[in-house]
Amino acid sequence: MGATVRWVRKRAPNASLRLMSQMKWALMILAAAAVVGCTKKDTPTPAAEEAAAVEEEKQAVAAVELIEPLPESVDVNMDKVLLGRSLFHDTALSGDGTVACVTCHMLDHGGAEPRKTSTGIRGQVGPINSPTVLNAGFNFVQFWDGRAKDLQEQAAGPVENPIEMGAKWDEVVERLRKNAEYVATFAKLYKDGITKDSVTDAIAEYEKSLITPSRFDQFLRGDETAITDAEKSGYATFKEVGCAACHIGVGAGGNMFQKMGLVNDYFADRGTPVTEADLGRFNVTKKAADKYFFKVPTLRNVELTSPYLHDGSRATLEETVQVMGKYQLGKDLTDAQVNGIVTFLKSLTGELPTHANP
Image (cartoon, rainbow, N blue to C red; front, side, top):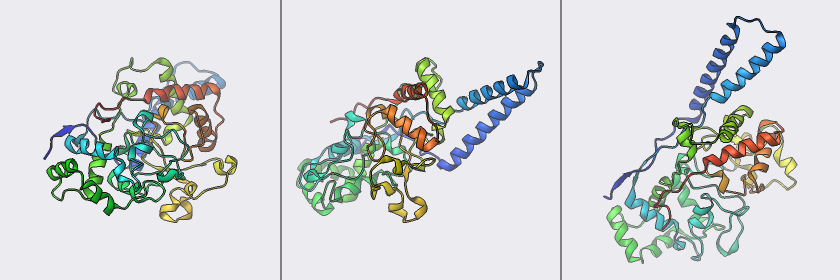
């Protein structure tokens, strides 16, 4: 029932396996570069030989593509997508009729929000910054702490969160059943009509359709003119300094957990007390080893989604890149490196599909 449209994606393979495969290819490339260096006819001085080896290694690392292009289409039911779009924008899903999904996932703000942390019903301030909903179907789990396995499970959570939408699903379903247009549409698409499951399924179908191919995807597919030389150089820097160790795959992130403050203690230096939200994955597993671990965020459309990080503490991309360099990589990045990486990141800004907005 309803037209099926080629809009979306292939599920990404296991992130760990993919990373192992990518590292294997990287090592093979480096080994090949070393062999080439050993077969030169000239006999360079030790210093020149070392410098040449370092340069060859940098070039080999920069050549490895760890980010994959977004698919040009994915399978979605467009009738469900349009129904999900209505629900995504409908404040009837909140307890006091003032908050909708789009309140914290603003499409004109890269699918995220311009606030440090979310604001729910009755002006309540939440504990964490909302991640983008754009391209979220490529995430291996949902929410910063990974507590939802997929988009449908994620869509169910905020509705009954007392700080966010503050409703009860039974009440939401009864409210939606009073809308004759919803009743008719759900009856055509779902045998059980309006239920919690059908509502969240429609919202998830809409969210899956929100893919935003960019110029960088054209570059990855072989169009060398799609991005500028400055963006290419920034991408090489992005890989050379180590950003691509975590920001990989179709989403340039979203397919692994990583510790915030992997190399240096981010929370000790932040200057504010550690909150429950800062504990990340620990809040789900209750394992001490999972403290401060978060899902690596996608970098797609990151130009649009400030403020940054789970705590919304950084206002600019430049500052965020510096923070990531220091606390995740253990590096004090130069201004030239930061500016280059930011230039590259802007090439990941894509366009919303035409059906995204009502």
